[in-house]
Length: 138
Image (tube, helix red, strand yellow):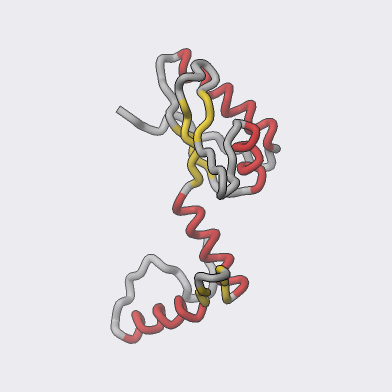
């Protein structure tokens, strides 16, 4: 059975402290017969650096999203950025810059989301998960 085993709030902690904390927590859990199979975090710069210290790579051409378990290097621990938080970051970035472009692929505009929101309101679809009434939301 898999279930969340720990939640560590590390506001203001640097990558070295976070790497040490993650290693210690995974080790202590293992000593209690709990196997850690993944670590989930948001996309803050300190968290990205923490993953690099854990031997992960965020380089798109050489992505490594698993690191060796600190007790048994034959076991790999998956490093996962929280998808909901990453979508919020993308939404907030799009709101801030209004247009995001990917060379050779195309672009997306905040105007598209605003137009969709207005269409939903006009057609009576009042209950949406996308909160754009007053701009970006957390």
